[in-house]
Length: 271
Image 1 (tube, rainbow, N blue to C red):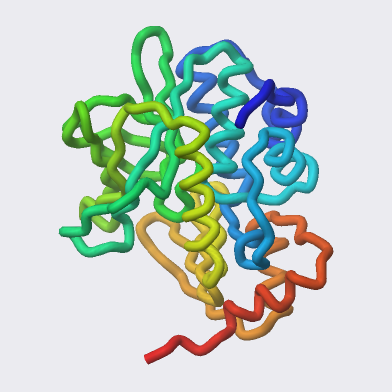
Image 2 (cartoon, rainbow, N blue to C red):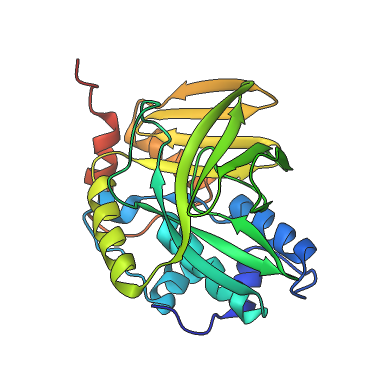
């Protein structure tokens, strides 16, 4: 489902003019500016439009139309970009633990992450998790607390299964678990079908801005900075459109499906 990346278009999109040598410094820099520039968003499934995983479709949407996307789009794009820079990259499937009870056991993979070889050392890279996701790669090494530009992470377990945790408000929280087995095209198709179903009902967006993490779920906008969270409740379609444009940097698609989809975010919460 991938081809050769349009590297020039990608670098223009993320406003990156640094080195593209396949070093850890380049990987760290690309990872950081990607999540600061290209937002996580689920407008297409919310509008009941298909999400296509051909690289040309991802590039058209995320690079040329200046949209965002969900995990498969972000990380397949990054995979192709890194490969064009001569990194060795493996896409792996992950079962999401974030948002579930502590004893939750994922029944299937619904997330994609990347294992990147840099000089014989394997790094976990992931620009598509959204809200609490990493803003820099971490080494594939168990029981080692690792700093990124926006927080501390750790891996536990090991072969065959790893678990990624994030330290949030002083508490370690599980994000997802994964193995190092590479994904095939059939796996990606199944994951994409599942992801489209999961993202049909609730508006979601996320982006990094300087030291801030912005996260939108329906009409609740949370901004996290220096351990503090501020919340703004959006009360109109105009406010939602404004936030998507000016906080998340999304060029909204011109379609009559958009406003009915965004109105889902204003529904009263049941119960």
